[in-house]
Amino acid sequence: MGTQVHALGEFGIASSAGALAATTALALAAAAPLLIAPQGEASGTARRPHRPLIPVAPAVLAVGLAIGGTALTRAAGEPVQERVLAAVDAETGQTRWESDGVTEWGRSLDGTEGTSVVEGPQIEVEPAGEGSTSTRIRLTSARPGAEYRLELAEGEFSGVTVDGEPLADDDSSGSQALRALRIVGVPAGHEVVIEAEVPAGASMQVIEAVYSPALADGWVAPGAGVSLVRPRMEISRTVTL
Image 1 (cartoon, one colour):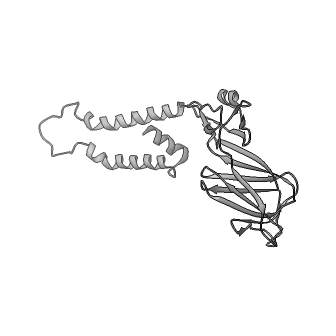
Image 2 (cartoon, helix red, strand yellow):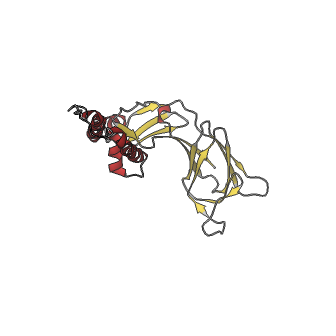
Image 3 (cartoon, one colour):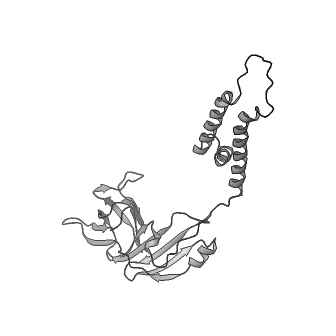
């Protein structure tokens, strides 16, 4: 109850805890008549002095719990946010950790290295077909929810299609050129097929982002006082087009 009242004060009735607190308060107010002893006709029998305290006791207890809970909630420390990234080379497994280093845990992890045994993205590069000057790039991941980022060392992608759908272009000219492509939300085992005009012989880095850093070597779980903000493992592989 104290936590709910605190949330009501912090975020208002829009919060779920605040709404629960308000509902509880209304329920207590509606039940108040039940806590008051009914007033009958006057009689010659005097009331015992302690009887009026009986219906008041639950209200006093509720108020005490609310105040105590609010005090404990305000005294509780907020977790410290940390961003962590494990950069993994798909060919060698070499891993390097990066973090904000705000907490002692983050500082101890930042800059550490290891060798991870993780399957990198599967990549195939081939001509798009007879009569076409485009290059077809096939990508497959063993993990669900992968995010791909394709970056050219030089030159640009143009005339891009992803799984047969042309990439949206702001000017609708179909001549959009990009140094990098980003594809989000790929099911495990799904083959993403990209066709694009690319410079022949250009070097392309393919990075697969996974939000499970525990898969990388050197991972140490943080304590209760650390809140991770979108922890990532990025597995990179370089191919020649």
